[in-house]
Length: 204
Image 1 (cartoon, rainbow, N blue to C red):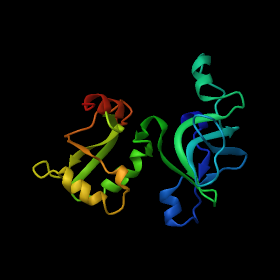
Image 2: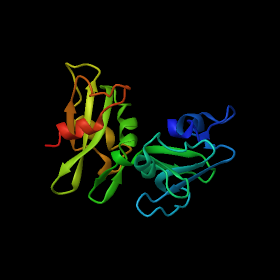
Image 3: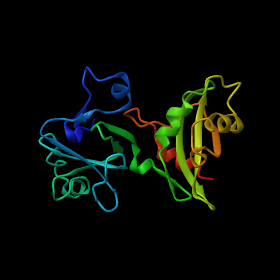
Image 4: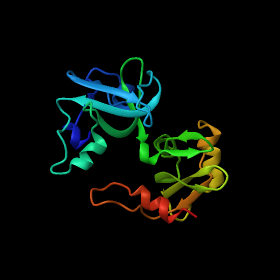
């Protein structure tokens, strides 16, 4: 969870089935409010729709120390914390996080969530790790790039192999059209992949 939310707003239960425990972040905790909204308009979306996850309650921080402007960017006048997470709340109240707003790719008007593609590509036998980012494209606005660390550097997957693999389960507009084979990913000091660096480095 986020440090700003101390750090959880939702949680699974011990008696939840495996799919819910591994595929969702659970249901909202007591005395906490959670909603999924259109990130542009702030309008609350119906269950089953993808949007920004926002949370409010006793666990949300008061603000960043001595940084009122930064606080105002993430906590609105109604005390809702804008998490920046893209999420879907199911009819059963379980929340699935599908990505980050800043990582979302808009290809030809279609919203593409890198996390979904990454999770699928991790099942390819030649892939040890993968990161998916959007890069500029004249025709579609953004194109999907898969940055892959192969299991065997001497036998990396080809773009054709990835395309064939993706056709099994992904919609055509979610299939990566570009591929980079890498040895490592750029990382932050906290151990997170610097996707912005991947986008900037391979923008061409």
